[in-house]
Image (cartoon, rainbow, N blue to C red):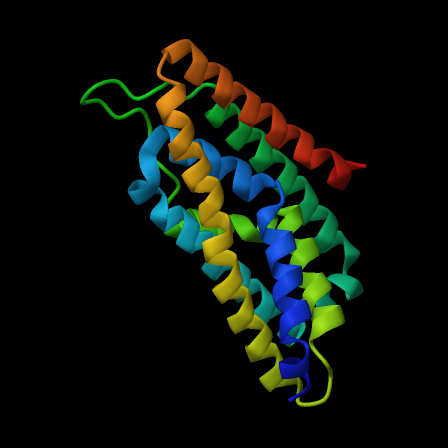
Length: 198
């Protein structure tokens, strides 16, 4: 199968796409700091499974629907911007966890999986991999290979951002410092919207 010859470049592409800052990773760093690694696992799994589902579904032809009806794509952008602004506000105003007290809840598996459909970075990654790394010959088999490689690379890679947030917890003990970190993460999340809006 042609995709097997492309597995290393494809894995490198997924690694680079998954490790660089974006909405998912910013939210995972914040989740790691505020809720810890274990409580952030459903969030991480949702991201990974959501991306895999996007690759498979878009590979089956949903992308063609957006080409035929550009208004669907525009609508998706509007929903994406509004939802990212909502998440940024939620992160900015989340306080530190007090002793024996929980502030808010981490993103669930389903919320994280659904979020990929309005995440501009996920769309860029998915469309890029389908266009470049899924050869048309034996397309279905190659699409399944790409989907599998995405899952194998994405989950360990995004876990690094959650661990980064957990590690920061040692140094960010003061409530004021945690609020400043959360606010900074919210600003970065808003800035990540800029390329899509422009």
